Length: 192
Image (cartoon, rainbow, N blue to C red):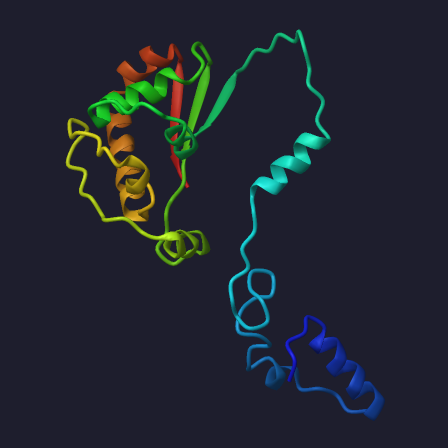
């Protein structure tokens, strides 16, 4: 049988010609394809897409505003995106946190720092593993030295989870200090 998104439609069409009613409970006992066709091909191989294509589409239809003064009440930061912008790494993870916070615009009322969760059984993780996984490192404290092969460090989901947890603990323990660095009245650290 061929894998086809319209297989149920074809079944209903064939049944209507013969006057029979399909038993959908029986039909749906078996998968129609090895995986969902939205994320895999008919043979079960995972589809791979380029997220950057969406950015290109959005930029094509955007208009650059000049001489506009903006004020912000809320500033939302993708933690790992910010981490990946670093080109000079500090010595310790504490220094890394402070350096990242200094990259955020100052004086904003509410700063929301968003950190992804890196789940073991996710499409994102399987894509990462297909590119190659690095060695898992144990982060003991914010006083630990930042690994010199930081790019490789970030290619391991466990390492990223450890880094996010380390950041989260540091943010909780040093809220007043971090608010001073941000010159902000509130910040939120959200792990999704």
